[in-house]
Image (cartoon, rainbow, N blue to C red; front, side):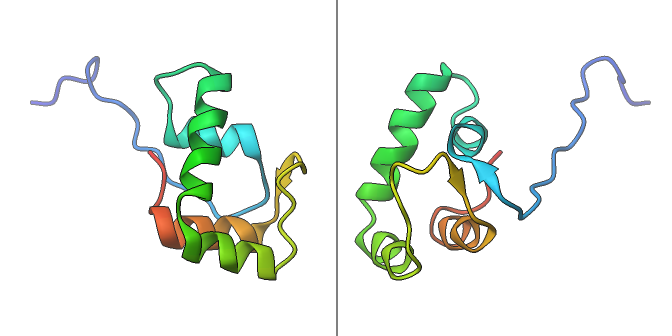
Length: 82
């Protein structure tokens, strides 16, 4: 018999446009939004192949949103969040 009170609903990742802090919170769910954003930016900076791909598609580090194609590159390099 399953214990329904302790089961967490399974989260599935959907490839779409995300706010940067929204995607950051998916990768770092147990920290504040600011800490998640800092960690996420650091992960992006510290992966030269990913940065090269993102820059080739016009990535802007100051833009609040990540386009679907940019999210796809990030997920390919970092894996799906959650």
